[in-house]
Length: 358
Image (cartoon, rainbow, N blue to C red):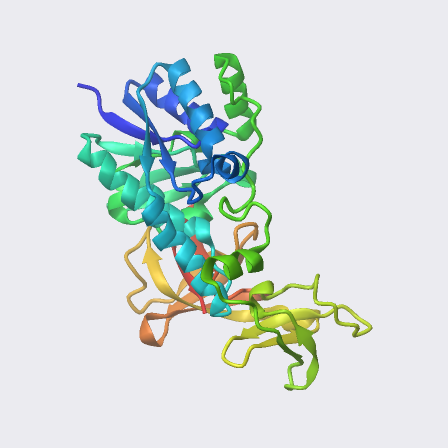
């Protein structure tokens, strides 16, 4: 009897081809689109739903019909609101820069979808992410970077648990994006040329500050720009408008480029410095999730670390410090390590683990 797998279908080319690949491999494939968009207005859902709007449902349903697999829409609105949107707003108000995709992956696309899939008799779930899953000699499961480095998505998946990894398939990670599109074209799938989703799905206009104002009812409070010595050098629009490393949109006439070096929500201050002031050799993190190993156990370890999604990675030494935190000492200073973002550790192409930057 073939294994039953639920494929999370976003209506895009990657998850569509993932479903086809698994069907070709003999799996009993069920397509599911996760309804997470909060707005009940049909026009808004159609225009702004991104990977989870009505057009995504239509595209995924057409692909499922083409592949001859059963297809369902599951409602995860409440989980998404609680785990992703609430978290996103709270982090920004606390002066941090969250990554909602990491939260969505761990708690919605995996935890919630996996539970419901197992409940309907599935053995595992699958996605169209550009990553691979390996079982290592030590018995642990770990993400391995995809064949194509330019599309690799392991950074946003570092927080998955061992149980989640053990019940997940990622067939797309063995191919390049061009190969995936070519497969879709040969199959005649209607989404073969569909562009990739780029924006945060619930903020399609990229205006984070306006979203947070509308979502929480908290108006952005203007405050002071201060230099590294605490001198007031101007007024800002509210800390939710800024992130560490930002240069554009500051509207400060300093005669040379200046950057955000820190956010201080307790005093509602945005700290401004020169370009060298946004570099650091040491990054601390907490909320650790270990993957290729089960922890450091007092050992210092050499890894390559990424401090944001599009960071190429830099060599560093990691070690445990107080309060369950890990310190990363980089060989060369890294730019704009923003509190709230993830730092993800790699060794030989495998995800060792990662945490949230402090």
